[in-house]
Amino acid sequence: MTNLTTILSTVTASFIASFVEVVEAFTIVLAVGITQSWRPAFVGTGLALLVLAVLVLIFGPLLTLIPIELLQFVIGTLLILFGMRWLRKALLRSIGVLALRDEDRNFAAETEELERQKADKRANYLAGLAAFKAVLLEGTEVVFIVIAVGATRGLTVYAGLGALAAFLVVLAIGLVVHRPLSRVPENALKYVVGLMLTTFGIFWTGEGIGADWPGADLSLIGIFVVVTTTAVTLTRWLKGSAAIAAKGMVR
Amino acid sequence: MRLVQGLIEEVFGLFIDDGNLALLSVILVAVVAALTKLLGVPPLVAAGVLLVGCLLILSVSVFRAATKR
Image (tube, rainbow over all chains, first blue to last red; front, top):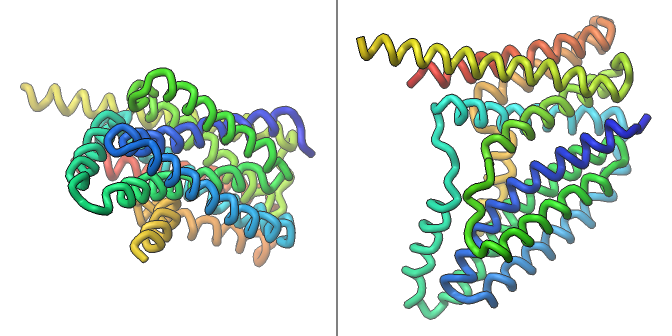
């Protein structure tokens, strides 16, 4: 059964996850455009989008051949791995164990690299390749996210719309500010996406083994609350422990 | 060639960051599937085990990384 809860959670998860990935790709494409020229930036981006479209056209129809329970089980398992990886990283960043991602620093590093390559005869090619790689690699993640959150319920179009909206929003903001989107609260977004993807993963793996969740799709909300409560409690506890340890060291 | 290798690494890296977290998660899913298919445990109970197991694995992984500092 597909209801509003499923559609909204699918679109939201796809939008936020894709937003984070598009911001990362945008930083590199912007660096190429500003440092070298916009031609290789657009050619590299266009070619990468073409490759991604071909991949979707090849692998998309194959998914319809897989029995739904097996699809739910496999995609659910991959989502658990993917979601918990994001959640772990976001948790560790929020308690200060890992450094926060800094788009300004990444932009500066990419710009420096491109400046070094300017004397090279192949500078345009290398710049275009940098844009191509960035869009292809981040785009691969977006494609996986769209398929993973959409395929098991036949909501790939909704998930795709969420990703497209993220792309357009980042592009619109990027055109206005014309600099890396460093003020985007990337870790908070990754935290939320990690929670959502882990929730989807547990839900679909459960369905894949034949579980009839109480309340059907509405149980997504219940699982989300349990996962969120655990993550928030863990964060607070570890932050508290770190603060106590720091006080102890001062003494 | 390096691009293809990078792409493969990126796809692999989508799912695996901390090896322990990934391995334990896969083992948990396999155990849960075996519980229902081989031992006849009700699927909803197995799904509950999956939920609790995932949260335990995540908590232990984060705790270990945080206390390693």
